[in-house]
Image (cartoon, rainbow over all chains, first blue to last red):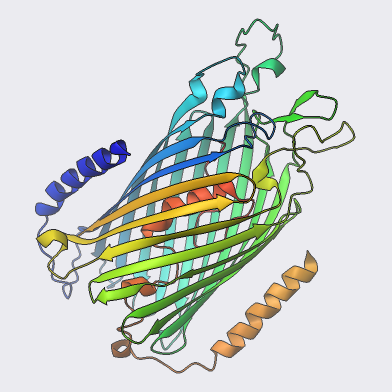
Length: 400
Length: 74
């Protein structure tokens, strides 16, 4: 916990230093030079514990902690046609420790995979023609960790309706990933039970293509809604090589799921401003895929404005899913099964997530610092009815 | 699967038809809609929450978040 505050404090100090060198901008002036628009920092600490680790075949500790820091910097300029160009660069770094990853080698107390760091930079460029209500965008992303590399790219388009009360948007994303084939040690060729680590390897491809469509509409001065849907296609190696599956006869195998997965989620959001102090934010999502998982997600968040610049937001989210047809608990699968996993993220379960957020955005800046435009903190507790509990605390600071 | 997709599409079409009867709200009438808390989508602070939920649950998408790229292996 101390680490997250120390890292957040260090990044804040750096950001304040950067922000103080930036001249105050006049929002009515449309600069043709690239100007720093906003710097955003998100830091979070996540911890979980459970009893169904996939690495050990659906039994064993799922204890895990993760510290994440993401810095987002956006620049804007107006081109000679008056269009607003926005360049947003993001850099994220996570450091996590995982008890179950330590069990790739069952005899190890702490193997190399006990802790890992993930870095994920990305850049997005959008061009917005405010007169036509049209926006185009392109972006690229990278995510790299010890056993996984993901390269992503996206294109997007958005068009407002003539009265600017509705907007249609479309985004196509592709992720070309490489999974390093780290096998449980006892399943590696040449393993002689002496604990010798014959690190087999190689990589396998996993590709994800996602088309997202959405339509938002202002209903009246207090209510707006958003309809959204995705069509996601994944191909390639979709199992995880170090997930064990124990069969009924006690033999051990690597997880095996099909090499193609289609996901269809559709969702609706509605936000309503009641009176001057209360906002109701609702969300519902229906999801189905060809692994046999069907889920429903519903959430309600209710920001209460203590004053125009300070709000408190309690929130609650409920989620339920059916089990994948390829899932079975520890020592249940048989040799007759073509595909098998004991990953409890694919099991039937329901989860509850609740918590509270605080947001402050005073006109003279948070703590009187005119560059620190807003500060937000959020805590949530998550529990699954399959013996998994977690907590997350996040902090977001926005500098202008 | 097809039945559910059909139901979802039907739901979307009916919703869109209902929305077409909306009144036009002028820019100067949007002070409540422009409030930072009224954003239709996830705010930046929810980024890491979405990540862990994507990793810990079998489903993802339709929430302005990413739908791939990243392991979530543990």
